[in-house]
Amino acid sequence: MIIHDIQTGINNICGFSIKSELGSAPTLLNASGATNFVYKIEGLNRDNMDEINSIDDNKKLIHRIEAIKKYGSLTYFKMNRETFKENLSMIDTAMDYILASILLESYSTGKTDLQELIELVSEKNPLRYTNPKKLYTYKIKKLLCSVALGMVPATEWDGHDKANGGYIIVTQTGNVVAYHIYNRDFFETYLLEHTKLDRPSTTRYNYGEIYLSEGSMFINLNIQIRFK
Image 1 (tube, rainbow, N blue to C red):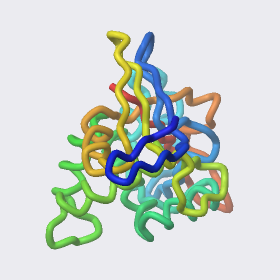
Image 2: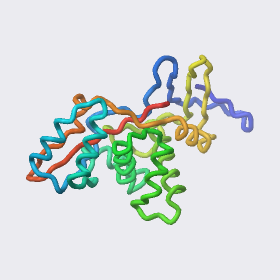
Image 3: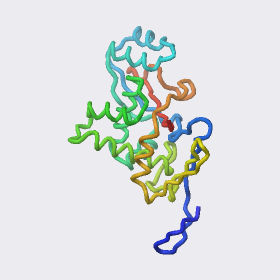
Image 4: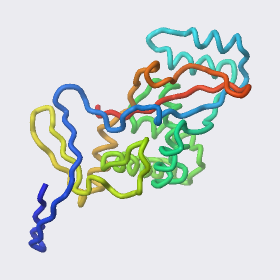
């Protein structure tokens, strides 16, 4: 898109990221093998593992996490792909831990709204911030904006916006709304208010089942972010 700056009279050609709300809600962050977070499980035996993995109802992920907490505990261990972790570190060195905390809250409570999940994580405040809600909200806004403007999990990111113009959204009514990068604060707020976590396929992305590795038990949880 050519942007005409009325203050300077300069025309700039800028790239925009485009999403359409016509039909089903679009994704902001797509699920892949790179978006798996690995959690270490302690306190379970093999019988517990087999029992939990056999849970297969329509809320199996939530019920499996409940059962793990009943018998033992689980803590964030690492990300499945180092590339995504390094990309997140460009935003904040603790971003993977923040996302892992939000993800676990989602699979523990069934809540998917990002603002609600930030509230829950802020109450527990795993990073011991003095003003937790303000800081967790700020950091997640930066993450959403980075993803919207070009950062993807499986590709090394240099920290620069690929869509240097902003974001174009085709609404459900057919209107076209453009968020220019000059209005970044407004755009970041829009993203937070209109996104949620999604539940991608467990079989396709290999998560949600306890497995053994080098004598320890682990479970993968996958993150996908979708517009409401």
